[in-house]
Image (cartoon, rainbow, N blue to C red; front, side):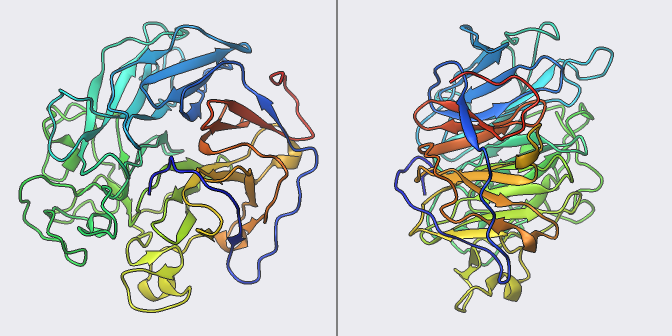
Length: 437
């Protein structure tokens, strides 16, 4: 399902016994200066500059600095931008802008390879690339890119495309299941090298033609330790030599034969947007459903190898597996969502961020939305995940269709709207200057 479709409404559900989130006093929005075209993500390096960087789907990144939208883009590159393809993700190295530290001039982007570029197979390749800046305080990046990872794809949708550095310093990358409805190939469940065999219940062990085995996953890469030989377990390095990343030793499938060892989590349909909770390092994923249910799932910090259920389950409900009701994750030993909602309330979840910024009233609130509704939704984040509580029709703030979220250096959360606006979520206790409406 495209993340760019429109509709309306909301009703959320959690595990039995949880209470609804309470209304947030003083909640408001402030408009960020500037005009943007299909903004998908808002990012900020931890460099003390106070800048925020706004990713636009068609291939450019803009900067807001000292309350002013700079006229010259930080980066412009050619991409294929149809449907859910384009410039989809941005991540600054944790050392970005910090003198004397290694890799302090590096940032990474996720994009769809443009027409005319060599492809590994399928419709388009999804690519992670590394860029640098000419000086640590530069507002315009160098134009030369280094290709780090390539994922062959089947279609222009279900690309995932979000990237973040985790608290462990590794780069995390989300990929969708390739696009076809009803999961005909089963790529999201496969940990090893399989062809497109039209059988979602089996994973072949012998590559045959184009290999789509990184689809429907969250990958984890060590991009600091690079330059070695490409090994058979590095499935994203086809056509790249020397290797531009290495496999973290703690990745869950290291040491097993015929696996793609970049894989950290699997069983996703389209993990369009995800984030890390600054307080505890938990990974929070918005996974776009098919015809019935949307979901938010949580993976505890430092725990890899989990199956998040697609396509045996859609949300908590049975999809490929036999059964009825909401017990699918329990019967399949897959990760149950902390939040799900049906398509009577929306059609395409947009995962957000847990607020850890300067407003005490918003601390611990997970903000998220749907590309098909106009409401700003939130949940009270908690550990264990079963205590996450959703607000039902939980705000009177209508923000319009939402494509992405982001946070700045101090933890404020922002909304990227389909109409081109970028807005900052504000609570009743703010200790720094905001933007004027």
